[in-house]
Amino acid sequence: MPSHAETPEPTVLITEGTIGERVIDLASQISRDYRAKGEVVLVGVLKGAFVLLADLSRRLTIPRRIEFIGLSSYEKGSVSGEVRLEMDLRHRVEGKHVLIVEDIVDSGNTLHYLIDLLQARNPASIRTCVLVRKLSRAERDVQVDYLGFDIPDVWVVGYGLDYAEQYRTLPYIGVLEQVEQSGE
Ligand code: IMP
Ligand code: MG
Image 1 (tube, helix red, strand yellow):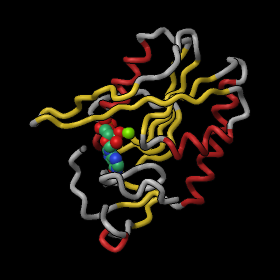
Image 2 (tube, rainbow, N blue to C red):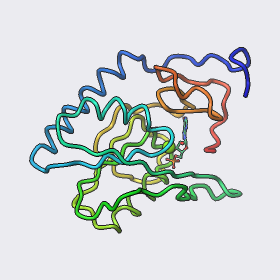
Image 3 (cartoon, rainbow, N blue to C red):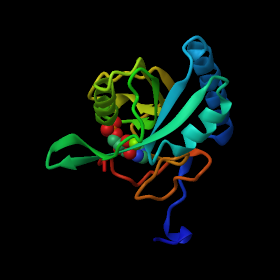
């Protein structure tokens, strides 16, 4: 693991305070929307969504359960967007109100795959909450019901997001200038 001195300092894109305010807004919007529905199952996508899931879930005022799913996406030759299920949910979601919590939508392939996967299990409903979306790179018109921020086409780290497993625990979202957009 590189020492701190070897990892370049990201440039702040979205401050800790701005993220905090947005998470409060999202949580109250979600709490309002689900009030009449009963329990919501929050499905956090590992690993990047763990910070948003922790902050968001603690701000909700509705009954909720926490579940995790593990996905990986990788590029294969020139064909990007292959997604693999690394760790499945522990419990059934049939008849449940599912809210997917994801860190980032880039091409949209990962979220698209996950919605299809869970839809096939006959939940009562599926919605998605995404921290950041790179609008310019979206290859798919993927369903984002609750969005933190739209961002430009840059590599972002912090608040759960990583570069080579570094920076996930930064309290803000920053840009790593020297990273090439490669997907994985
Ligand atoms: P997708 O292209 O929407 O399927 O996103 C694929 C995955 O690439 C995401 O779930 C993230 O793990 C990763 N990713 C894409 N862009 C970034 C970024 O700017 N920072 C950190 N991870 C990213
Ligand atoms: Mg992810």
